Image (tube, rainbow over all chains, first blue to last red; front, side, top):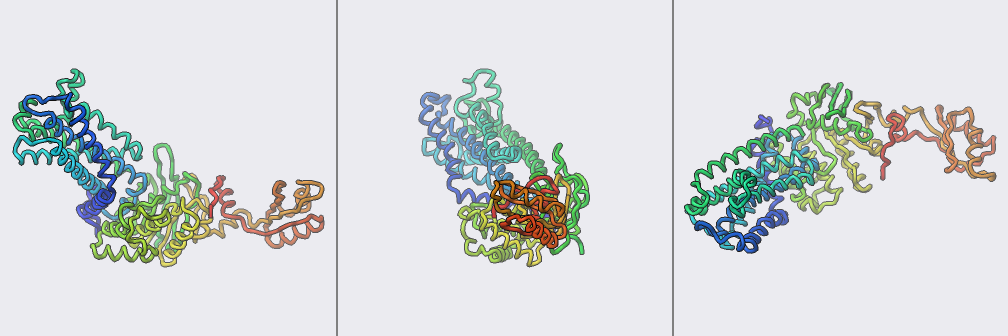
Length: 268
Length: 320
């Protein structure tokens, strides 16, 4: 794994890009992939905006419900979009595609790096469409545009971390159906969080988890970056507090997942 | 000449299962070697070891003189692998798939394009080269998969059950393609469960069972290994009823060889160590006892029978 270039072979960067292009081709030439990725995002957006939205919140401390919910929804969209990386990797493993790549004289790390890059591109596309839809249903930025863009950038970064996580899941399960099943670990992370309702409405035992789990911290970072002072007042801390914690979680998820993925990949 | 594969005492365990139990195998250059064995015999593990995908627990393995454990990257420049499934990307064209592999070999864009075009031409895939692979038939996909393993101009081609699941016509086409490659100077190691495939393609057949080589030789040598030729006699029904015809034949042949009878199909089989001489004696003996014969033939045993004799496991019968 320390080999960056096999003598006469492709460099790590070049090989990763060649592998990534395959994934990008697949995304762009298979409309179902983007559509399926968007279904979750769009369905939740519409359900929480128009079905539950009225009952859940009339806005608190100067933040309307749609402005409260969208940063959570975008973070969760990255999580759900990352999920299909697990199935794709397990599929490549089961179908012998990874064997073919591993039998080539190139840095093996390029196989995983390329996969992560192409899935991050896919997640970013889904996030961009979801963000556009968010504005269409009434979401507004109440902070500077620079800060809001940083919020979107964070969503992409979280997506990148989730992709690493699901690549590791795919390699661990080694079976597309099992990988699909393991993806449901995303459900508690997305619902037992501050995504759709403030955590202080939950019972104490649940609240402890909801308040401190990474997805909540990430959402709150995006909230403060897009909603400014009102969100900071509502949540209790400044954006620096949430962003720093979110970045720490992101780094931890990437480190652990990448270690598992690389170790596992070298063994299979 | 350096053997293209040289395995000595190769051992590989997966948990409690021993896949390779001290396998010794030397493959001389310029040959097509078929690894034949029942499921779980260790065929795939051996091919994966040569492909540097599996790291042996013991023994030595050299590919074209290069140590596969110590220097896997050099071995990867020597081999081309086509596995049990067509490992090609369905959302890319055949040409794009091949160019991708060439780029991963470190070729420039231009060289990759030329290399892909040459392989498409060589495998008669030129016409479909610019179609997305998801529109390909199973046979075409396998052919492209074979092409992907050729992009690196390998010295040794590794084919793990190359025709499993293909219809007879696609199999035949793939056989032709492999035969042409071998004739063009590429060494081939293939695994198969089909005896006719080994018979058709291989110069040398290696039979493995439980992680060890149990026999090897040319298909002809292996066939003569199990006690020489056989005489098959189909007898005509006896007026006195079924069964008595084969019995009469068996009585007539007594003392000439080991005789087996199958009354239901009216088939009598006899070993024939001296070949034609035994056949002539058998004919005389049957005529002497007035046994009515529908058909009589001298034949070599099939690889199937060799295989059964050596491993105690019947193989899958080929569909072709």
